[in-house]
Amino acid sequence: MPQIEQLAATYSSQIFWLLLIFGLVFFVIGKGMVPKVMDTVSLRDKQISDDLAAAEAARNKADAEEAAWRERENANRAEAQALVAKAKAEAAASTEKKLAAAQTGIDAKLAEAEARIADARASAAAEIEEVASEAAADIVKRLAGIEVSAAEARPAVKEAM
Image 1 (cartoon, rainbow, N blue to C red):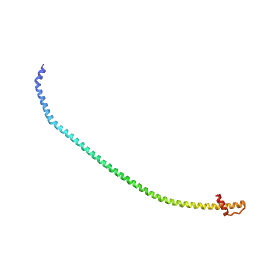
Image 2: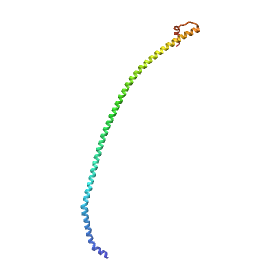
Image 3: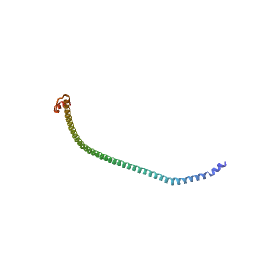
Image 4: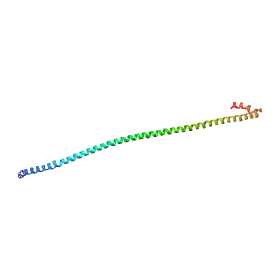
């Protein structure tokens, strides 16, 4: 078979070129480019890990600052609430004093009015008693024909009232 004979003649030449190309590729790519690529990859990995560490530190710092801010804000809020409570207490005390003074005035006016009413009631009762005594004396005079003074009729009217 002529093809096999020809293959054997060119076989050694093909192996030579194959080894030469593989050697060239090995030394150019394997020894020249791969280390540079690996250095770039390791440098990139280091940069990424440094960036992640910096981001973690920044996040921790921001968390600490936020916690401090919240603490200050809560203290300020508590202080403001204390001031509001104090103001409310002062306002309530002031209002209570004003109400007590007003109530004292109202009580005095009420006592005075009750005294005037009692005087008016007593005066009205005396007038009614006097008018009733005169009317009773007049009725007795008309009905019985007996002359009775208003002073004599007064004990009977008092008893009836």
